[in-house]
Image 1: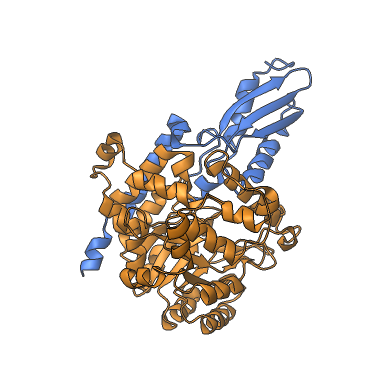
Image 2: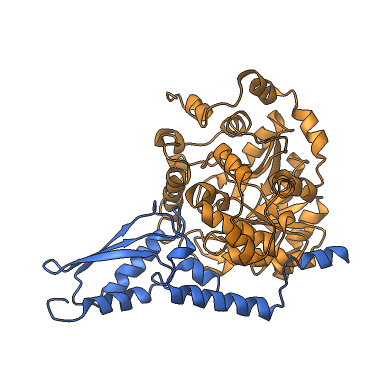
Length: 132
Length: 362
């Protein structure tokens, strides 16, 4: 709980749920950094109102890492309980799909099934074209 | 060769990371410096522990000599593909100068395969002119490398846009075999759309006589690339960056290969690693030992990856794609300076040549 008695956990979760993984956006399935499993944890200092957020990215050389951090910082700006958010990026921590949330994984799976059905994609369809 | 299987590394990079090459303030977030910083992270985090060069060697202009010695003295790579990169809105020289292609083809024409590079967003006529100049100078050029977006100002194109087709016609008419496009990894704070792979089908359909290479099989969204290689016979995926998962997350790499085998088949994958930011030899050895776990074989209903599959991926597919006679190519390098040195001294230590060229103790 914050000094004002507000459930900080809910606020943090809500703020992070509004930050999207750029590569998921590029693949037409916007998933939050929470759904992607990029948030490793966080600590809150009630005295200083500083929130320390531990994160990783899906690739250690992610070109978008600073944009993700900036998006996180912006999401916390309206929160009175958080004076400052400090993002510690652990880009040496290798991300794998196993780190995704169940809901994120399901969203992605559904979207992929829809995409495959929409274009009538079959495995190794190219062999038919090559035979023509 | 690795265990008598020819190896063609589908992409290596003589990047220029010298600080003087960085365009200060490029893009909204100083994208050029960010790209350098990110490449430092790749080098440190995606090589086996402890295998890296000092920053005094890394943040330099990589020479063709460095690439040649690293690839052919320190790894089982037989031939390597090198691209001129036209990232002129990030780096003053585009990141990899055309002149490096020229030097490689002058000094080691039987070891390197080169791609021209142009920026289609600067105008299709200008891109065609630049392509013609490069091919004039290097008639053995086999491909074209493009990036889907540039910065300052932000601009991009789709591969299947008919306005870009005159460029693909020029590629075809000049006798080139392949267009390689950077995908999957957005280059900084830029629109995401151009990095999607959904525009490759249209180009592949319109130009069946050309081959289309999706550079970077992908990481988190590799399955989308797997779909892209399923539909057309002339669409391939290059393993650059994806292959680094062999070190960083081998179980995940197994799954990506399983997805590619299921959707595209072994014929649609091209070995590549982007060396020397990662060292080629540990990845080659790990790929050679790769076995896909039973759980994934069942999940994707595929047979175990075979020696023949690996031979296709490591070089056979690339050779077929550009019409290369592998036996003839190997005969030409059988007694060159690299083969002779390999016979005399064996495989050199990883990065020993880079350290030597940089004047660093091994």
